Length: 167
Image (tube, rainbow, N blue to C red):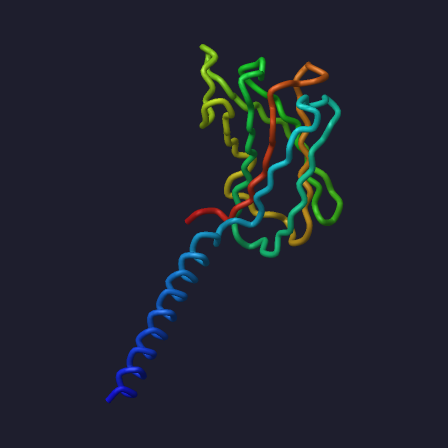
């Protein structure tokens, strides 16, 4: 009788382990399904130089589905303006280039920061929604600040997220 009970206990332990691993794997796979690229870059020397471009390089393997591209900005209380103008340039795998401009509103008319946070504020701005990349391959997106200040204080990090469009 002792051997049957030990075998039964071992079998129950194995089943529990398999169940735990299966549930963990399910959650792990379901959480990260839409993100293709997510990267932050720190602004060097605490000031964003006017001519300094920050580049993000990512792969698009499927150009038959729509994507959302989002610019993430992290600023602190030292940022002196309500808005931030961004010049961005996208280089396609074939080498062609497209350029655009984006105004990011970081504070309301009374100076209250609109981003999430207390002393550091995270804001998100859509660059493209429901976007079909024209081809598969390696893309590079470069971002420069478009303000009239040569050394822009208060922007700590910029980021880019490329996600499969949420259904």
